[in-house]
Image (cartoon, rainbow, N blue to C red; front, side, top):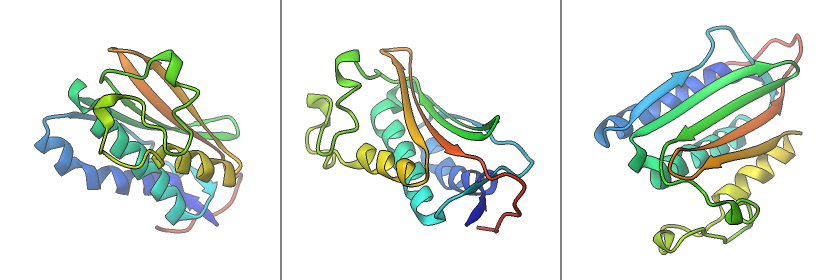
Length: 157
């Protein structure tokens, strides 16, 4: 159904404020006040966004920064989650979305390695995609790109 993604992302961001404050991670949130609608399953979209947020905190939290931005670009919505942790080496970027893949020895025992594959599947089910950009020791950004709903009223979350 058409969902106000600004409202959904804002609500998820609010849930993370205490965790990030406790870890002394700067939280840079950029969500437009105006509604940004997408035709999504709200529960699946929330799961995808929480997977991305949790990964950014777990693997990039050492950088002390987490950015969350929602932007409408033409007929798409871009939801970007960025950290300043150690990053993802180039040789791992193609593998990172495969089920059960964990990129580094430091991730042993910290999950099943299915979070990013779930995000990719949810994005595809909504006609979207996930994009990864990373420069090791500078930043890592995952951008969830979804088709924007054109001219529809949105439901409250």
